[in-house]
Amino acid sequence: MKFDSLPGATPIDPDEAAGLIPSHLTLQKELNEFEEANILEGVQWLNKQRRGDPLDVDFILRVHHRMFGQTWRWAGKLRLTDKNIGVPHYEIRPRLRLMLDDVTAQIRHQSYGPTELAARYHHRLVSIHVFPNGNGRHARLMADLLLIKLAGRRFDWGRDSLLTPTETRAHYIASLRSADAGDYAPLLAFLK
Image (cartoon, rainbow, N blue to C red):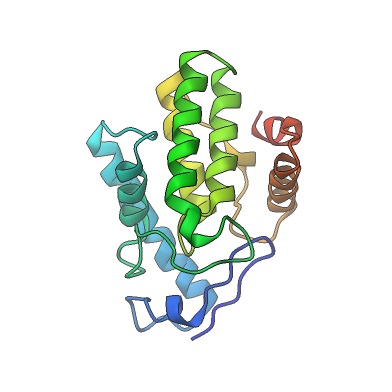
């Protein structure tokens, strides 16, 4: 089974596609709808938790599993293959640990304001690309959790769907690419 991927999205390789739980899905639109329902259930679970630390590796994995666990057998597990984006798969855990330690130190030393801290967290989580798929959606939710923890609010993410090919999605992807080059200004502008 092969699903289409959007520009800037990670293609699902055949081994990962074999991890699809609902066997009745055949179209990308059906997969998107099923994932979206799964994500909503994950967000409801998260809202009931009232706890959880976006700077904890186990919590990061658990949130991804809750977001995609009814869709993919590999949900909440580190990816085992290299992708067109992200660090080599064998570097995921140490890079994630380093990122979380960096963010913890940045919070402690107030290196950036809450918005910039959460934006940088989001970018680094996406750039590590922890999971086979769902990284952008997961990283956006995790950044929201961090911003809620730091400032009691969340991002609006451009007020448009980032799951369809829109001008907003193109702007979002371009702002992430600028952040890849060390320029966070476009990402911060997108998030304001």
